[in-house]
Image (cartoon, rainbow, N blue to C red; front, side, top):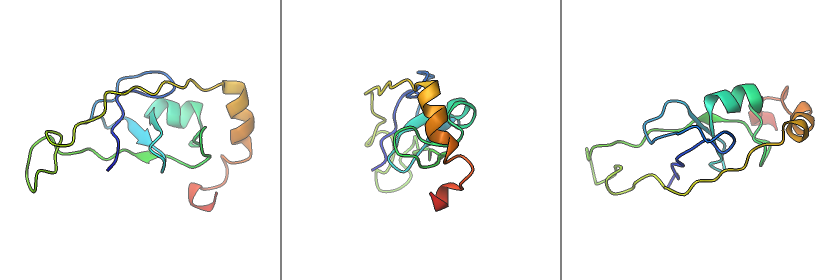
Length: 102
């Protein structure tokens, strides 16, 4: 199941479970929209993949106990600020390649 991380890994912006600002890569690295687009150029600093909006888990039990009450967001913070110079060099070779072709 998708881990709903509570903050941006780069800047610690809060990203509650219902945030429309949360972006993830396929490994669930989690960043706010600003960091994912303006700082990281849609290149995950951990895997080189792209980002997609993080799905929002239902807050209310509508079917089969598949909701936040049974499957809450994690409280574990992953704070790994990105070294901008290193990431700029890493992303330079990838940012113009669509994520599905990386």
